[in-house]
Image (cartoon, rainbow, N blue to C red; front, side, top):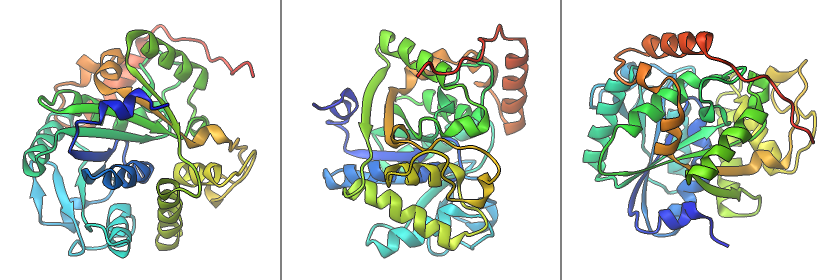
Length: 312
């Protein structure tokens, strides 16, 4: 049983897998990176970065992107640079393209430059978590600003296939996301044809083991900046369950690690973008603070849905 997402990728040959919301989101794309490479496709990695990539690399692509490679200067928080070393150790091409947090227009232009440089025919945005599915009328939006920036920017590109994939159902409860709303939004996308199926990231497979190895590697290299999302997902893939804490950052809170966190939820990106109630307000933005303000204002005036717990 092959899900529609993989059927949609059959004709893709040059694919950019990009972290949607920054930070460790690119780690959630590593299973796809491994799977697609093993399928004989050319695959490249990118990420919206929280680091000062302008100080780390002089290799600029477009107005807001840099090539991170072994020549890039290390910083205190720089998962993209550590990922370069991880790729090199595995015999993969040691490069990651890092996008600065800007507005939609500079980011769109940077994606366009990268598409031209790499001759990419497909872009897969990957969200570690599920807040990228928030439309703007939910009780809370999590940390949607960076996700919305990436989705809006890629949505405006022409001539490439565009998808959104989420990994980590439930992990955003820690950040205030209502998963009843996520499932309601997904149901709407099913009805409109924008949902492309689910698939599990499993231990003992090249794809699952790559993610687990990368998380362990990044934890070792950045012990003071362990990702809540990435470690929760890794714990779920390993069979962790319940109130399990793999990073001190979550001590004192209650987590619910479970097998649903190991599922990829796959979507047509255009369908997701069309559902964002604040899309028009951020589409022409030049700076990141414009994106933040537009979403905050939209949410403040939205007729919000009530928070509902899952009846399970």
